[in-house]
Image (cartoon, rainbow, N blue to C red):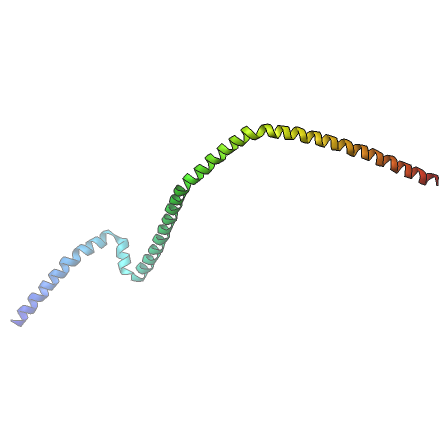
Length: 140
């Protein structure tokens, strides 16, 4: 009876093993890359680690991109209000300060002309004095 039980147990174990392994072997035959990875576990581990590192880099790049998007979306109202404020203030400054600039410019022009005239008269008087001193030097 012991031999019959061993034979039955062995045949049952073989049947279960072939029932479980046959689909896996068929799938590995259809996918040779996975079969190669199963046959070379160190390469599989190295490629798995490389894949994880690449995925982590991609994940962080996506995180930075979305962070930049949301930050620019939050900053947008403040930038728009700054541009609107700048445009309105520039318009108001050009509208009300422009006549004052013209008056100040005309006054400044008259001041500059007056100063140039006084400098020119002073230059002429200094040139006359220099000529007089050079004339005395030549005579003496």
